[in-house]
Picture 1 (cartoon, rainbow, N blue to C red):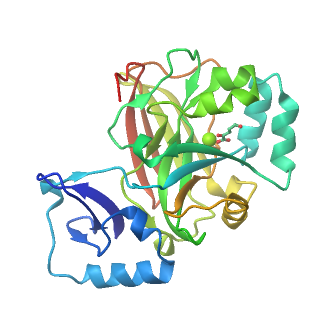
Picture 2 (cartoon, protein in one colour):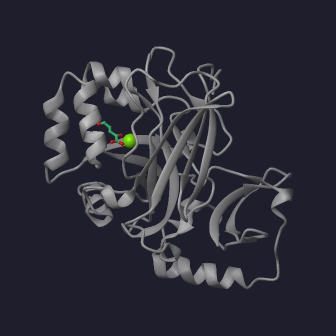
Length: 286
Ligand code: DO4
Ligand code: MG
């Protein structure tokens, strides 16, 4: 049973459950409103909706990006040894990355407002002023306004690596641009995931039919716990409509072998889902 948003042919949007076969509405008009509630209330609403006779065929609707309203996406960085080593290699500012890996306070950065997020099947963005763009496949936590973990998503934290490599304080330009924040469609309730500390994450990048990069990692290699990241994210911050926290990447393609327009990146996370997007450097006007 997963949490999704959808649009009906008449243009109205709804929030509800997807059980693999059918959709059932929840008594909340938006996902933002779901994330204003405590997990116990959300679980109750899911249990009540799951037994409802009133159901829809997913073929009748369009599944949407899973978040809306004032919900934001934030990223954690340098949470895997592999990311620490890669950043130190690619940047002239090695010390910054080595220190943050060991520091108490993790690297946390604003990634996206809900309206900028794209989902499975949408085009991923490449900045035309970047010579080495990479996908960052990550487990993302969906948190309510009370800092409780509600569910999980697949996130592609698309990054303009050559821009960040010049100077770490270019990070906002390397992280925030059209098509840079891709989330899977369905929020998997956290209480249904077995052993979330050990989930396999895979990514393959296809150029035409050829797989030009494949990598995998498991969340057991993360240096920090989920609760630790959530604790720091809510220090001195407020998320009235909840927040998605992407937990960092453990898969880093080799330097200089970045994405090209037309590449398809496919990411999977055990029990959480899949995300597949074709890259473009021509986004047109949003
Ligand atoms: O330090 C830059 C960001 C790192 C990041 O996004 C990651 O490790 O996933
Ligand atoms: Mg990342």
